[in-house]
Amino acid sequence: MSGHSKWSNIKHKKGKNDALRAKITTKIGREITVAARMGGGDPTGNMRLKLALQKARENNVPKENIQRAIQKGIGATDGGNYEEITYEGYGPGGVAVTVEVMTDNRNRAAAEVRHAFSKHGGNLGESGCVAWMFNRKGVFVVEQAAAEEEELMLVALDAGAEDIRTGDAEYEIITAPEDFDAVEQALAAAKVPTVVAKITMLPDTTIALDGEDAEHMQDLLDALDDCDDVKDVYSNVELPDDEE
Image (tube, rainbow, N blue to C red):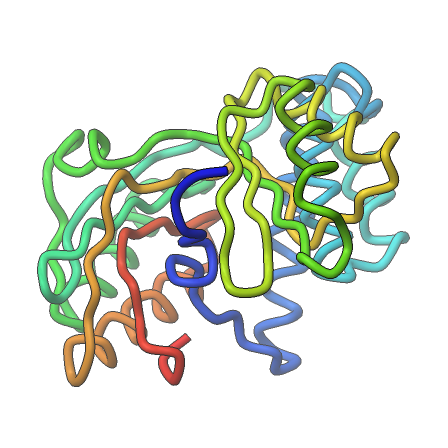
């Protein structure tokens, strides 16, 4: 058991209003369609679809929407019109930001992302300018009340987890992406519930912001989330509790 859990510090708030909920559902549906189109409609052996379905469950996407998205994907006769692009830049206070986009209009996506950065005190950078600060990892978050520390260490590490970190009320299990499946299966077999299970980008170090910089950074994250073409946003910011 090492380190201190940063998960609660680097994740940023998601709005709960109906309009944003509908937008999230649409984005996840698009992701499911592309995943099914690329690897088939069975999540077994299609990690991308499996993760998209996990995200759908976490966001309470209706089952009919999920099935419709899968059918749309496996029924497609071509490779689809969506392309995936990664933008990198800096937010207020020099915070590193990586934006993953899935779009059918590269020019529109670039304009929206650039506008969000410039409006909220950030700026886009060259490809690779912040990528070196992040590592793609599998992350599982387990509430401390749901598992004994020794049991969790035994199950997760034996299954191939790289590290287990402890926070104030949760454990954070870190895996290499290729070991995500094995650790997930081991946790399920041990009946250890998770509140987060995803492959994400984790920063090597974080930057703590407060005051106006924190407010502007939160506004930037919200603006990027609000872009229709943006799939995921990662940053190395630590925001005060009242900004998360």
